[in-house]
Length: 377
Ligand code: PLP
Image (cartoon, rainbow, N blue to C red; front, side, top):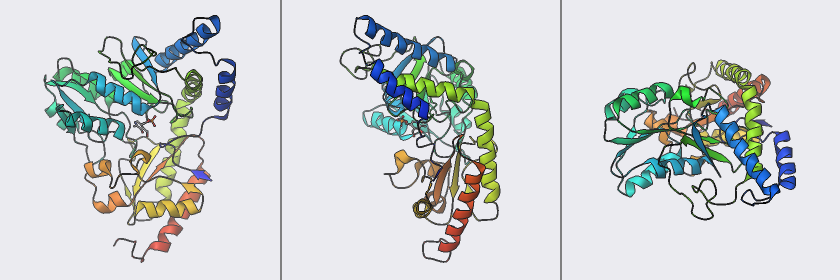
């Protein structure tokens, strides 16, 4: 089996899964309890927050653990977006930002979207033109989950701070965290979102990390857990396991990155003699995500590859129920490219041999369908 869909989710590390199992058996106590066993679990939770702050270079930030990055993004928008101020959203955001912004728009919020360049980055000129003192909130992702395009967040933060008085800048860092530098001080963001299952941690854990002075709102009402922002008994075993996965990933961040670069270069070199479009930029994008388009339907290719136990996706998994591809369309790609898109996404466990097999199989499949009515001329 070759698994090239790591931007969608990663396999949990075996020792992390084992640790989570043991922790939930031995430390099942409710962190809100007032006896010593509970107090120990509560202090584990606090330590996990401190560790996350440390990994993000965010010592003066507040951490709220959530059940997903989707939830963290929803909390960010519903807390920081104000009705009397303009909201600017990157044109290629994940649906957890995009759909929430659309919802706010329907509720009467003033929402505008920043265009993408043909390479899939936020168009900094368009952003600059749209920024003024009426803007109260900006959300722009760090690494695009469909194309791997990397936005220069440090530069964007500077522009936002120069052009607006008090706009809050949130960044969705799900595809960046543990893969590239995500030091929040260096990036200059006010709030940042991360997800556990993209970095070999368990499903069902995310976090919103934000400057302490920001006006956060209660998102889920109840017993007041997580600083009264999202009530519900905390998933401490999952959170502890997430931090264990993060620790492992951070240790190898540089070597993993170099490995992903080798895989991506090999993939593009192997495919060099066939007709495909690379959606993005080979040099500057994240090496973990490669978006390719062929002259057939991406879905057809996906299933042909699946027959050989090779797993990729068509764009983002979260969008698989929607028709078309919003991000590629925003980049100005034609219908052939948007229909014929597959996303290959690596993790550090993938090998060069797997890349070679993938390319060989893909070429055979493409040869098979050339000339059929599913092949576009
Ligand atoms: N943001 C980005 C950029 C993503 O890629 C994803 C998942 O694909 C999410 C947010 C949502 O993450 P989660 O599955 O933890 O809700």
